[in-house]
Image 1 (cartoon, rainbow, N blue to C red):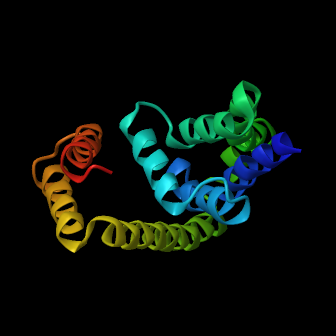
Image 2 (cartoon, rainbow, N blue to C red; image 1 turned 135 degrees about the horizontal axis):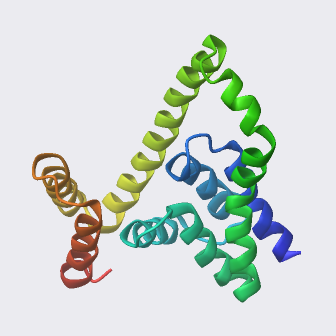
Amino acid sequence: MIYIHIFLAFFIPGILGYGGGPASIPLVENEVVDRYEWLTVNEFSEVLALGNALPGPIATKMAGYIGYQQGGILGAGIGVFATVAPSLILMIMLLGLLMKYKDSPKVKRMTSLVRPTIAVLLGIMTLGFFMNAYEGIGIVQTGLIAVCSYVLLQKMKVSPAYVIGGALLYGACFLGV
């Protein structure tokens, strides 16, 4: 039964997560934290940070790790497959139809309505991470990491991988978390 749950936990967000990995992360969080209670919010944020620090798609790395944690090697395989299966199925079935209607005003209007929803979901997830960090390490440390990350990413154009790695190193050295 665990393998069915692993499949559903990553297949459903893959279907509903219009916009790729970042759009499906809040949906995955809902499944693995709230629905199945495999991870806490803090553990999920750590898995997300680790997934961001490594090259490649975030969703598949998270699915592989969480699937392995819950069901071993087979669980990892099922989690990764469940993450890519919706895209694979849709690409095979709808590619011709999509190419035919890609310039349709209705399709463009649908896309313009979905994007703000994804932005709100990402904002809610970010707020949850900030609140969790505030409770865990305090406002000063949370603010310092957030400001430094903003400056490095937006002003100095440092690669996100280095910023995430630096934040992980900072936490390991100075916060003991």
